[in-house]
Image (cartoon, rainbow, N blue to C red; front, side, top):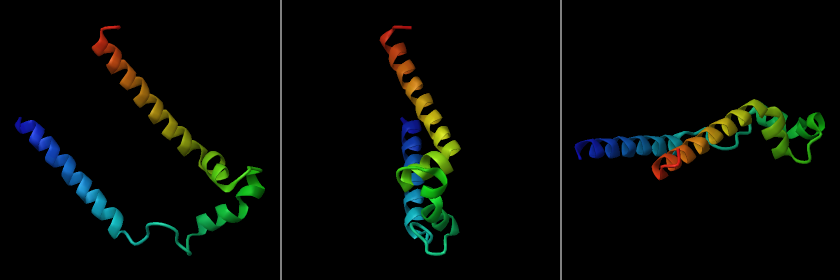
Length: 91
C-alpha cells in the first residue's frame, strides 16, 4: 500500500512540475524571431512538392523524427497486445 502511495505522489509531482513548466515557459508557441519556422513556411511547398505545409514538415523535413515516433507507438502496441494475450493464456 505504501508503494502505491509513493508511486502516486511521484506521478503527481512530475505532472505538476510539467504543467507549471509548460505554462511559465515564455517561448511556448509561435515566435516571430524563429528562423526555422519562417524557412518551413516560405520554402516547404517549393522544396518538397507536397500538397500542404503540414505534410511537408512532418514527412519531409522531420521524417526521421516521425519515423521514431511511429516506432515507439508500434512498440507500445506490440507490448499491450502481448500483455493482453499473456493474461488471456493464449501464449
